[in-house]
Image (cartoon, rainbow, N blue to C red):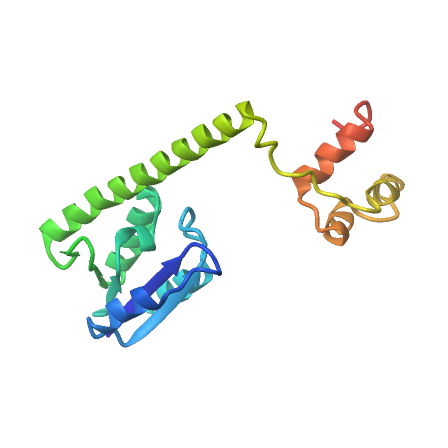
Length: 188
């Protein structure tokens, strides 16, 4: 079975171009994620990896749609290989059914990771320039009404810190950072 995987980075982006490209290749089932490629922890990617079986062919529009880091790509490829599933990237024109194709996929994965690093570097440079011109001040700090009350409740053992974090929609690191800011001598 030919199985397609489509990914765009945000909810606002459209998937039609990739879907049409895969349909032209005879893809029978498509899994679509609207999430960043910086991690392999994507719901539809996980479903696809569980769905595929021996003899299937996974087809993507380009490697960068499948994985952005060489490590993630190689781990995904290893799992596909263990299941005896082939992989085709249309843009790069490579098929892992051949030894040369497997080698080229490794090279392209490294290039995709390099591209991601260049994007990060350009982003950092842009932020630094914006800061120098007073146009970038970073993300606004989160507002957590009731934080101090819940912090006191957790100190008294009336509520667990984990429960307080859930109520506030706050991450563990933010909880402890804010607790240290309020009571630096008490929180270690």
